[in-house]
Length: 236
Ligand SMILES: [Zn+2]
Ligand SMILES: [Zn+2]
Image (cartoon, rainbow, N blue to C red; front, side, top):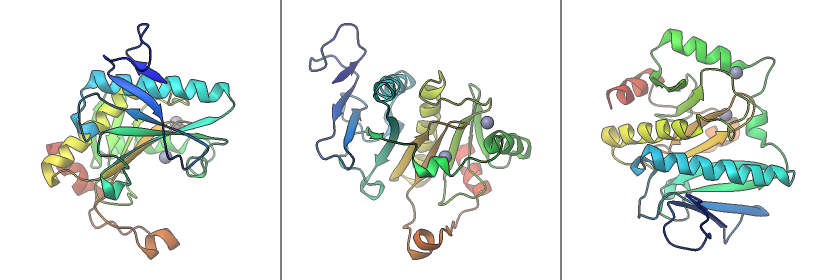
C-alpha cells in the first residue's frame, strides 16, 4: 500500500527500503505493519539514520491518511517475543484509532508538564543519556522497568508525526537499544510515540515481567535506579 523511497514506484515492486502493508490479523478495525528494511534485521538497533528517516516518513504519510479520515494513528514497535512481536523482522504497528489513546490523554495537565520536566532533568543531569539535534534522551525518574527511556524535543512541539525531528528521535531510540545490547545483550523492548501534547517516544526494554502489583495497583517495582541506567547507557 506504500513503499519508500516513493519516486513513482508501485507498492509491490522491488527496490523498496521501507514499506507498509495491512496487518493480516488486526486487533483493531484497521492496523498496518511498517516493514523497516528489505534486509532481515531484528531490531531498530540495526537500522542506520537514513533508514529510520524513511520509517518516520512512512509513519508521517500514514498518519496524514488516517487524519484525512478523521482517525488518529498510534505508532508502536514491538521487539522480541516478550515484547509482543508477531514477527522477528523489525517492523512497527500502526493502529487507526477513533480517539487519542487514554495513556497519552492521561499525561496532560495544566500547561506543559513535559517542558518543565525536561528542563529539570537537563539541569540535574544525572538521568540524561544524550542530547542531540534538539532532542533529549533520558532515563525518567519514575521509570517502570530498568533502562526505560524517554526521548523528546527540548522545544515544545505538539505534532509528533509532523515533526522534522521524528527520524532523529527514532535514531536516538536505536542508539539506546544498541548501548543496552552492548551492556546487557539484546533485549525485547517496546517503543511508542505519543504524538500529541508535547510529543515524545517512550522506550520500554522488557527486562522484568509485570505482575499483579504493577498491573493492578500501578506500582512499578524498578530494581535499577534511573541514574545507574543512564550512567550505563552514557558509557555505551
Ligand atoms: Zn512542552
Ligand atoms: Zn507518553
